[in-house]
Amino acid sequence: MRSQKIGTVAFWSLVVALLTYMTLPTIVVLMTSVNPTEILAFPPQGVSFDWYVKAVTYPDFRIAFKNGLIVTACASTLALIVGSAFAWLIHHYDFRGRGLLEGVLWSPLIIPHFTLGFGFLLLGGAFGVQQGYVMIVLAHMVLVMPFVTRAVHVSLANIDPALARAAANLGASPFQVLTRITLPLVVPGMAGGWLIAAVLSLTEFTASLYVTGSRTQTLPVAMYNYIREYADPTVSAISALLIIATTLIMLVADRTIGLRRVLAIDTH
Image (cartoon, rainbow, N blue to C red; front, side, top):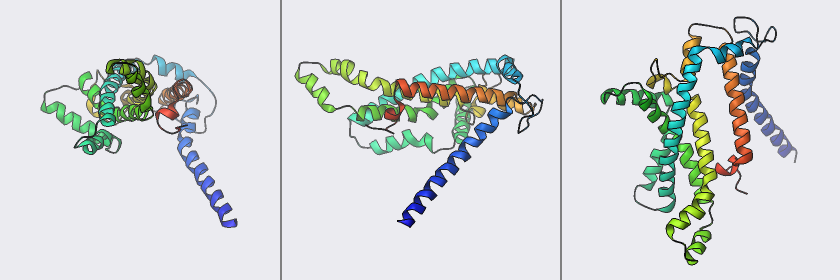
């Protein structure tokens, strides 16, 4: 009994330590973003929101944010279309090479992003494709597609097969079963997968560093270029805005879509 209690205390102590380790950098960023001095300092020597004003008005950041929105919208939508098709194929059909296909689809989750970015850079050079939107969108699509495929696959797996059989017995055509039963039940998974893909694409840095140019740089790349020249808290301010926006988006999505079910965290 005593050993069990010690094990429980040790487990929760480890959980608290890990959560503290993961959230501490975020807290530091939030605190340094309001530091009134022109150099990064922790703890802050006061409170000022001037750096937030500079973060949203700095021309390079505004252009990079616009570029990021274009890339995110295109990459997430393409990932949704292609990933949903692969999820449907894997779920409904058993064929030779299915395991290999799944491994290829999940591989971006374990391959370092700088490797993929460098690979796309070499691929673009081989085909004469410049570091423009096409190359960035393709790289981001590959990186975020596993999350869309996973979300859609989970949604398909959670559909009761009896619903489709009942509809067919009542005279519904395969197209009607797809549009009136399957798709409405899969839409939350598709929406959740697209949202996760959009957030990841908007904040992707490592691969983007290889495939973006001076005119197509995304916000993370612009932030990296900024801190190479300046050491003020502007980047902390824009990082804080991204953290807050991402947190709010995920909370709203969880309330409306149910991300726990989409990601198979909670199946009840």
